[in-house]
Length: 616
Image 1 (tube, rainbow, N blue to C red):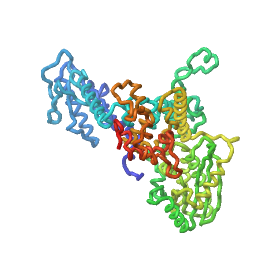
Image 2 (image 1 turned 60 degrees about the vertical axis):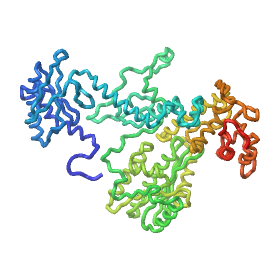
Image 3 (image 1 turned 180 degrees about the vertical axis):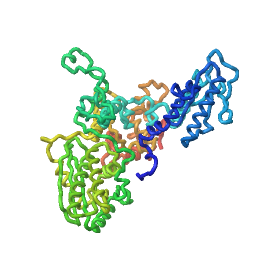
Image 4 (image 1 turned 120 degrees about the vertical axis):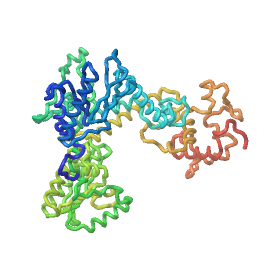
């Protein structure tokens, strides 16, 4: 952020405060404390730069004279302080008593210009509200309703439907909601709301230590530090919470919605301090910091690895730090870092980062420790450049911009350490660069090996805070697991064709089936759900006019066209090209290879496209 000589940075919270202080004398011109007796019956209210003068008396003509004097005083003050009012935004409206509605409203003359009052059938708009002379707000409701209807109509035009998931998927309207959710890879609303509650609980950990809500969430065990003199200490709840066993036996409620919400969050979750202020300079904006992220050079992984080798080979008297994070199958994580100078390895280390953190957090910890080791070596060897290489583009981006919440403690420590290093000398430079992983880059492979070794550590005797990234992932996993459990229980007790056909667990990651043409996807979903032009479906819903038998005399079942004599010559399309094995009915509707074979058979044979199958 560039330094300025006058004013304050954009987005600063000081801006409205200073503006109110500056405008304070203008408001004091009116009211009981006004030095002009005539203006003591005038009041001024405002919102930022929108001001309003009003007065009340038995006569509208007297009101006009008083307001003209008040406007003259306000305009004089503005001129003396280098301000001016916009003449085009001056408006006048009268609010007479309900039983004394005059035929005409008097105008007002301001600086030689007549300001005509608002007609009785029109309104004046201020701060989003439309005021009519009768203060009935009928016109305001009409205008607001029209705007809402227009917005709703625009949304309706965008989606062109009122059937939700059934229009997202080309299925018949009788398909069950359970099948729709799984085929659309859409979390049912009850589990989505559970996940939203978990996320809201996690957000409590991102609040400032002095936030009033933290005094009401005992599960966090937060002990806010003493508030500065200019701040008010958050107050305790207005009533005592009785958490005794006696209260529990009596059935008395001792929890609030907030405390119940906080209990959904991991008790040992990391706390996040204040976010980076808009005027704080990030490393991304520092003139002696270079950040090279993935894809910025337009190279693939192999090309980027080769470019990195050539770049490092040309570096002399520079410190190179390689960092990496790792997570094992048993969810334990570790960090590793290796420090090189002039092509030689000087130090290497690893650290166990716990089982309640993500790879992102391990990468952030490795980045911080790598910078600490790199700056110590640079000071000892009088080096002026430090190059940090990581294969995690996300942590590099968050560290450079200072916007991360997860593992914020380590990222902020990295930023402070980096700025201290840069301030030690005008020639000091810092480079943060993405390097492709698992491409035989010597330093990166070494850091990866160290991270894997670090993840094999033990948590005995160590207090490891749960990271926000880990807590968010667990919230998503809990919602998905609840969905899968409910689906399994429903499948056991349901005779639905869909549950007997589809044997895959629900997931939120869309499959390749959604990339099919809408016509092909529609046929596939008819086969999976049994809701289509089949005999069992027509009989179930009493479609008396529907044809339930094929020309051969057999019932029109889902798989009848596959063995219909007319299409026998196309049956080789239903076989695996490599093994020659014919796909089972289950594979034809559940596996990618089976679905491709089924749709190829349908396309060539024309099956499922005729009301009656005739010999060809």
